[in-house]
Each structure stands twice: as structure tokens, then as C-alpha cells.
Length: 501
Image 1 (tube, rainbow, N blue to C red):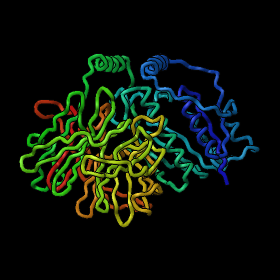
Image 2 (image 1 turned 120 degrees about the vertical axis):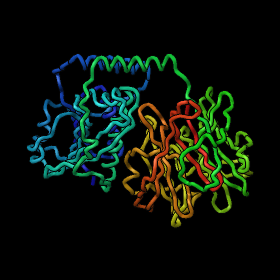
Image 3 (image 1 turned 90 degrees about the vertical axis):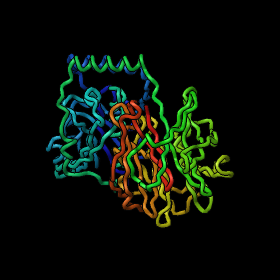
Image 4 (image 1 turned 180 degrees about the vertical axis):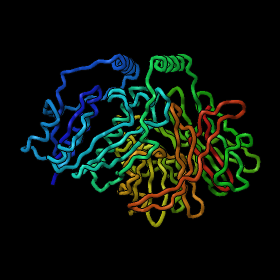
């Protein structure tokens, strides 16, 4: 039986995202009634006007358009009208506005109640703004749930703070709606807790002032005018001491030189016939597209031989995850632009590859890793939506039909449904029968700032658990400031990583 849902829409600049959320529910056969409060009293403060101008200018330069889906809306004067009309039955009420639900409303209807909220004392049109001005690494938000006894529980989430008022607010709202949709679509998901962590609960009390605004835009304007292209470089060093979680030591490492107009990233080590190879993404700056290259490494003198491009498509490729199964060698590169997860088989190592199977279709997946454990294949990836910025939510799929199948099942583990700070993969290390997932960690306006190593403690169809072991970062090398590192690969002979200048 369909759950009946009543939704109160916001009256904001970004209501098109809310409209699209409602349209998605309607399209997926939810029984919903949509309301909006008619508000003829507009209060325009000086702060409100300033931010309206800022957002207008950002819309011109960013050109991020989200088309609003048409939905049928019932207009009301106040929230009481929804609850007083006993002829309108509903099981769930979703409040997407600043109007607070009162105890009398809950007493009138024995329903499940959801609302979105952000940790910001400013009004709704400023949410996600102070985090940008204060250069916070993350913007926190939550979904509140009330049951019919009036008690509240919360799901708390976070997003990487983007260096744009417009984009940060869009991402904040979009990810909240994605999470709320998952909760409605799968009632068995339950990550709601009675309390919010104190670190996230502290509201942002820093006041927005004119000087802070001017400083923000002056810096942003100067970076736009005097922009210096940031490039990644790949290094590898000998692993004679068999250290699997080392600190970087670029002084003892060999840099693989970038070709003019290109740069390398996402290095993967792979050993075949007792010879070490390094696979990496090579990004063409002019074409704004990546392809896969390989290098043969020597463990005696830390030298390398470039073997050239080994896989190229009409679309962007990166993150060449190479592995072996039943004496065959496969690769899963990132093909997010194609909206699928592809498996390539090596016909002649390492130069010739062919598409063997599209494992998952209609998915915007980033940086996929795959491995076999307890007779099951597990695929861990990060996904985004068409309207979302780069990332991220971690997703876990499994197969009971072997590797070469299209029947990949999404895990019921709660981690497979919600955003996480460490959602985007940065490699995989296998040590005997143990697996260690590596992930990226970004900071404000810095993609791929550092990496984190996690030990996978448990993984099955319904559960995933990992433990953070350590973080790795580097700030300076050869008197140059290092902006980030976002990939690590280790075997018994070598350590490989990338650095961004």
C-alpha cells in the first residue's frame, strides 16, 4: 500500500530543486499532496539585498541551470490548514520550509514528520553562505524526524564546502533531498539518532560583514585573473623495508616526468611475470580529457620506461584499477562521463585491452575499486547525480554470480545510502587476506588535499565496517608548496603516489 505524503514547499530562490524532488516522488509512484504558503509580506534587509546581488552575479558566471519540473501545488495561507482539514489523510508530513511544526499539529495527526535543517543562525536564504566566507572545510546539515509522540531524532550529514555561494547552497540542498528520498524509498534505513554530535551542533555564530565579503571577492577575482594551472605529478619509490603505511619520502622517489600539455595522476602498481608496472591517468590539458598510460619500473635503480597510451576512448578515462582473476587481467577505469562502470580485459599485456562487459549501467560513478571476499565480489564506488557537484556518496554493490555479470546488487548497509566525509576512493591495498581502502580528504577549495587509510573490518551483503588507521599528507617538497595528494598504491617492491603543485 502506498504511503500518503503531504509536502510543504519553500518559497525561495531554490524552490526549483524542491519541485524536482516532488516530481521524483510522483514519478516513482508515491502518493503525495503538495502545498505552498502564499506570503505577500516581503521583508528585505540590507544583508538580503547584498546576497541577492551576489547570487545573481554567480548565476551569470557559473551558468548552472536547474530546470524546474511542473507539479500541481495547493496554495494555503498558513500551515494550520494542512492539519485542520480532516478530509485529507496522510501518513508522512515533509516540511521544507522554516515554519516550525507545533505540538498541536502532532496531536492532530498521528504521523511521521521530516524536515531539513542546517546549522546556521541566519535565515534560510543565507544557509550555506557563512561556511564559504569562513572557509570551513565542510557544511553541516541534518534531517529531523518526529514520531507521533513528538520526540525528535536526527540524521546528520556533511558536504564539502565549495568556493561559491551559489554552488555550495545548491549542493547542500541537493544532497539533503537525495538523502531524504533514500529514506522514503527504503524505510529500513535507520541512521537517525536522538542527539547531534556537539561538534556539528555548534551553530555558526560568526557574523557576516562587509569587509569579509569584500575580502572574499577580491581574493576570488585575483585567482581568476592570475590563475595558475594546477598539475599533478606521479612519484614512485622503492619499498625495500616492506612498509605498507609509510610517510611519503619524495627525496628518495623517482618523478615520472609529465609530457608537455599533459599531467599524470591516479597511479596503480601491478606486477606481472615478476616485472612491476605502473598504470596511471594521463590528462590532456587542451582536450580536457584523460586516457590511460603504462610504465615499466625497475626495482634496482628506480628507473622507468614509458610504454605509451594503452587505453583511450572518446570520453574521459581515469583511475585505472587493474586486478587479476582466474589468470586473466582486468581493468576498471573511471568512465563517469559515459554513465556506466566498465570492465576491460587485457588481451596482450600491457598494451591491448578490450571492453569485456558493462557491469552497471546508468550510474555516475567515480573511482571504483573491486575485490573478492568470502566467495562474493564487492564493488565500492562513489556516485553523484546529474545536478550534484563532484561528489559524493559511497555505494557498495555485491555479486553472487561472479565477476562477469550485470546483476550487481546494492548493499543494504546504511553506509551505502548516505554521504560520508571519506566517500571518494583513492586506492586499495591487499595484505594477505586483509583489505585496506584508501580515500581522499578534501579541504576548503582544495580537491584531493590528503588521503586516509582504512582497514576493512567486515563486509557482507548487509554490513560494512571499516576503521581509520592514519592520514597521509605533505606540505612542501623542493621548496615548492604541495597543494594535495589524492592517490596511493603499494606492493612488495614499490610505493606510488601523486602530488599536486
